[in-house]
Image (tube, rainbow, N blue to C red):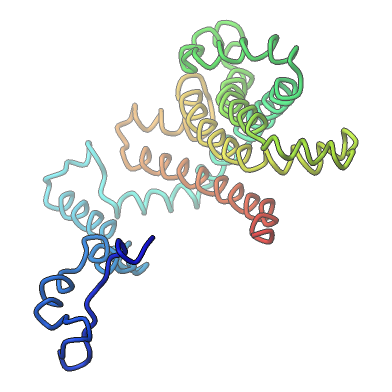
Length: 296
């Protein structure tokens, strides 16, 4: 930029005296007094303390409890928080809640293992082979468009009300999102990395270990977290339709008896299991992707 077109700002010295170019306090007030909108937004958004984030949930619980005590919220519609806590403690002490938790967790783990095996096998075949892409991807796309819960009646007809249909529903809920994210991650690996691998004359195993797996791992872990969420969603539906044990069975019986406190306890148990499994995957993600922070 030439000196003729470069914007200049009048210089003002301490005390408000005009600078050598003739600028003065009046010019400063008209040009520099108003802060920019972006700067104002940056300074106004101060960090929120962790204690403050608990304020709204606590207020909600207090209002919920008061509405239940005063009769505004009938017990047959929704139990009070104090009653839910007491009922949860009773179910925990007598062992009913722990038994239901173990049954649901076992179903979720078996379904997740089966779905992950199918998704990883299909994803690798599609990602590494054009023949696999042509043969497998259309089938997976068809399965993706089928409503998962619409398969429940067919599964009951085919497999009865045993453990197998529940595990298969969970496996389907896991396989589709994990497969899609794995294939997308493999296809999004930087092409320059392949050129580097060719230059270094890496073997297929070295190429897989040093290029493909690190490049596809972030997207795959995202798919893993999504798959866990779908696994619990599928399990909730499966257990409430054709189960004789587990959290869904406990919730279904409580619904028939209009025991809203037990229903809420079961839902909270599902939420806790989902949060724990997600936390495990997040921890795995931090450890597996630690090389990115070190490289940065």
